Length: 96
Image (cartoon, rainbow, N blue to C red):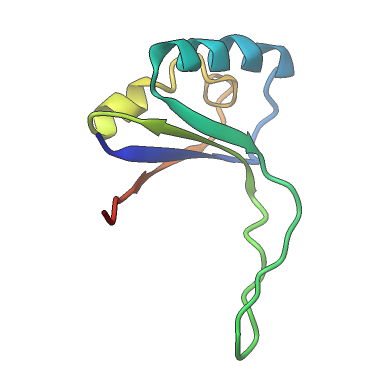
């Protein structure tokens, strides 16, 4: 089963009180693999000037799902998504 990551963008304010029930529901489903807010950081590279930090990302959730549509269905109840915010979904290909 593929893994997906949901990146929450900084384009809305969501109700912090709604995160615990949503995450509890995801954990109970068995599809939750982790997540966190995203703090400050830096871009680095061995040579040359690194690009600027991707500043619009504020959090992520990692899930496993049967396919992209299944992953999208897991956004129901996501406080950021429900508040009208952007959630970027990316597949995390396995390299076994």
